[in-house]
Length: 145
Image (tube, rainbow, N blue to C red; front, side, top):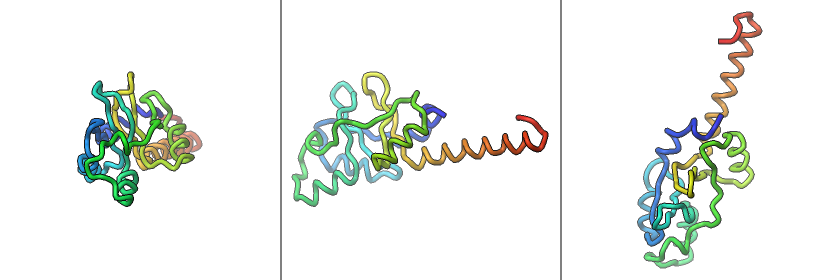
């Protein structure tokens, strides 16, 4: 299964801000339900970095300036995936690197969505259930549907 099959979920989780945005702007985006990652974009719309709730908390706990540009807070380089990537491979990367969210980037680093690890897990679980049903039908003599 490809990341592109999860487009509806990844697109719904997409949150972007500009390089000159403030932590408050990012916090407003991160306060929306289901948003765990903000993609920080350059003037051309290309992804320049990412910012998570943890990044903001670290900044605030160090008495960071409320008007600091996100370019100082964001994580770089970006660990991302593409629509043509395999969900299982991306899930493995997320698990290994302990990532809850991963940006989905297209050509020229244009943000297309954000993959949440729960969406990846659900897709993998659904795929396994489907394979199990096919195997049961085959064993029962029904054949493949």
